[in-house]
Image (cartoon, rainbow, N blue to C red; front, side, top):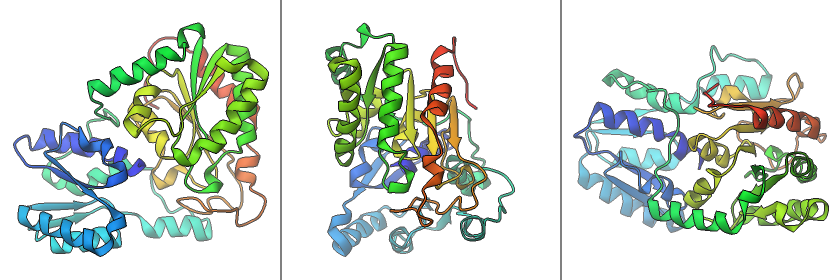
Length: 342
């Protein structure tokens, strides 16, 4: 999910540089809605990964018929390499993943990164030779009006106008070590609801419903039924993005919804555990604060997260206290006027 959203600046600046060109996008079916309505694209090819080689062959035939002049491989995986080799393009470009730097940092804790470059900028690097440059406008999502209207109706039902602030939580993540403990999210939400008279919205996918409900129950026990609502598992990706528009700030783990919140230009508090900013996946183009436990001998232990802490102590997340996250959130909620990118 995050990769797709982070590619949005590339699509925008490519269209600006080549306004009359045909620009198509290949994406996994489960994330296709994030680009399906993007005005900078001509077509979106949706890959159903459950279809295995049969689906890949079908897609390869479609791509070959288009006779592309350029294929830009943003993923550089086994699947994307297979597709790009058979697409018959005149030119093929790939991103620089900085594998040596990543390996040195994860395996040996040697920081060889000369500078910190966002993934959004890395996706643009291969086409700079064609005069394509990042415009600095950040990430974006194209949401149809019907979705915006539908979500607005749902938000009215939540009676957000009865609260002084609306705060979004994204407690999920694909890998367990990237999740700040649920009990910390719950304690944080209780404090925020009580001190700021805030409505708490908990975002996520179907896989996050259980943890979202657990957090919500603890909040309800202290501050009442109406103080929290579980959005996780009830909305599509674009509906989730549209619902985030109603939030004053989003508190999130290092996950795809962090990039969705950034694309919606929301204030973001991002909690990082096993991963670090050097990998390029951090909030882009919006006011944000990264909270992390710097100086740990074992960090980073992975560039994508793990199922369990390899050291067994999980200090990178457990040593991030509720008070620290609350203090940063409080500053954002008390800030006045427009905000800019950091």
